[in-house]
Image (cartoon, rainbow, N blue to C red):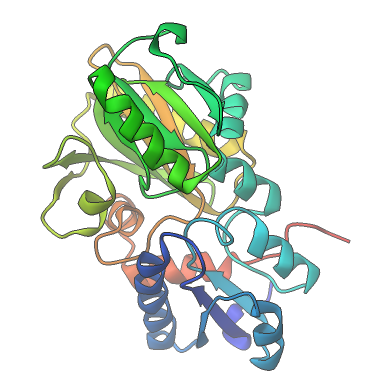
Length: 309
């Protein structure tokens, strides 16, 4: 495959989702890393006119630094396939599956991968604690959002209505999950292989949007504090989740590891953050000895079309 150094690369950032600001930071860091290494990289703030911008900017390959809807869910990937522009990360189907928490859970279950017990609900359906197969505490989350946007932990019945209102503010479909107590462990996948597992210890109750993107709000421990066999198990399950959705290239798999050694998969992030506080760059640096620039180069050099016609 020819090097991407001969291509005019569009770094797709910003976008239309609730994670726009984080994406702008990811994109700026990626573009700078590419420029520092001699690539021709153009920043593109993604809007509904993206197709025209890609043509006018003469983009030949895309580094997708988008997060959330319209960027991480297969929409942009489908457009790039139609325009025959090679791009980074997973393809259309894997991106859509990973972004949709219900369908990804069903794929995990089909692959024998453990996830928290759950019930889906659509807007207008009544959510009754008595009708759930599990009790408090529980987690309420939108089906299609990232970075813990719209997620609540419900400990008392009186908190449920507020949690449901918040989740439905972001989606017409939500999940109500059994709360699983465990260590927050995230596995980095690069070139379809695990490169390490990091433990997150948030200062708040859980690893929410603020904890993810505010310096000092969470402690990162690498390698994760797991005994050797359990550490390897977490990496195996992370890779299995990546493969169960048909992901390609790279991803970050979020797990909860219980005191009994069970590994519950929370989600697969097909376009993990690439900011100064992001976890995949940290895992790649400490687990595989890759600088941020080297990681960005590995990712852009793997850019490809996934639909062969």
